[in-house]
Image (cartoon, rainbow, N blue to C red; front, side):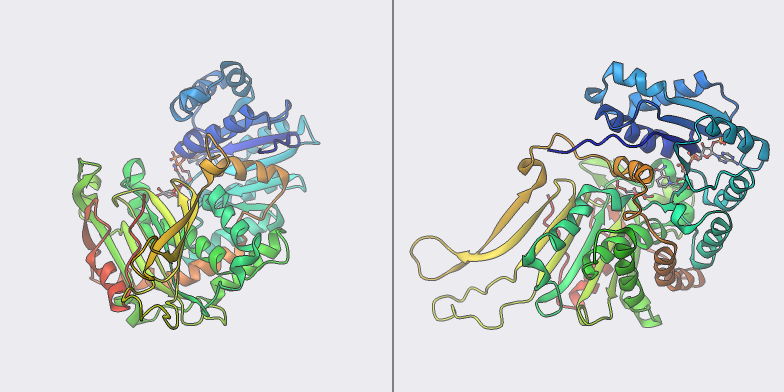
Length: 492
Ligand code: NDP
Ligand code: BG6
């Protein structure tokens, strides 16, 4: 049974409160926490944006968004009304100090509360907004600043944003969101690795052949096409979400779940990533772009058609990474992500080596298939372990592969998995930074991918086309093929 602990009284300011992220993710997430009774009576939510709106007009926008993005079955009208009543609105252009002063006056009505200021705005505003917040004194010990991704578009721009924010806020007050860290299944990865004695001793190059990390989406760039056209899959997914999954998979056991213990270990992984050289970029990094095709039987246009112009933005990336340390020397990490793939499915595959010698050969020509641990992150969150067993019945000592399968939903009789933002938004109130990225981590991840971006932008090469509904460009399959391996595509 989950345990609901009401958090301390807070004021949550969402700068960018009229935007897509706030309406589609943040407010529905807070509503679900309300539904579970986790919000204290005093809590307030204050939207900030340039639009001149009255409180009622803003509440009407929030209400419409909640009715669209919260499943109807989860709407309890009494809770809904209570939740809506928490909202107020403060019009403010990010560049005018008067608005911040008004905001401070509102927040100072309750000087003892935790104050969270969530910047759901374009990242170019993070530096200026931080400076204004500091100017009016909204950077005191109780103030926490949440920064949404993307934090920059390469290493220098990320360093610049972080440096600007650091002039106004202490690192301990800054919460950088990577929503993958808030996913239950991603936290389960830590539970699996460090809550069981079984795995640690086999979690290394002694028995692991290679690791695959896949985040596949069946959706296209969709409503966020303009943002995506400037970003592409490497910046949008690999630098953050996939890099974080790699860290959690490869890191050493932290001394505790304390934020810096975990982040120190993740940072060590990022710093052990082998830099890409020119040869890697042609053989071990594949970028693709979807063309028209069909998803679930429905025809969909190609990315360039959706965007209305030819573009070199990649909607797919596959790459081979190496973590150069004692534990992982010689074990490739294959990462891939893409839009308009056949299914929405994210998983981590730990592929173990073959047995060193088969004692069954006199009885069977069957090869023992190597063990494989699949950690399913979404959907159908769970774990499956492929084992070799004896094929039942007569016929000699023949082997057959079978799976030990754990579905978290069935095992724990869950009706729903909380959205990642539900956990993260309240972790900020709790002051728990374990699931947020530290500045050095973020910059190390940018340092790893920036050489790829630089080479791509200087080259005439274009992303390789792949049909919507396929598993990406053939070059990604060939990259595996050259290593005598193949992608795990048996996803449900
Ligand atoms: P939107 O464009 O939908 O919203 C931007 C918000 O910022 C609006 O509320 C806008 O309101 C406000 N805003 C813009 N300029 C100013 C300004 N000068 N002063 C005050 N407010 C301003 O963007 P999204 O909500 O989609 O994204 C917000 C951020 O979150 C972006 O950095 C995005 O990349 C990131 N993100 C978004 C995700 C999503 O699913 N949408 C997912 C992950 C990250 P107004 O115009 O009235 O000022
Ligand atoms: C976001 C990316 O960070 O993650 C989107 O900007 C992507 O492009 C999304 O679709 C995927 O998140 P999830 O939780 O749906 O796997």
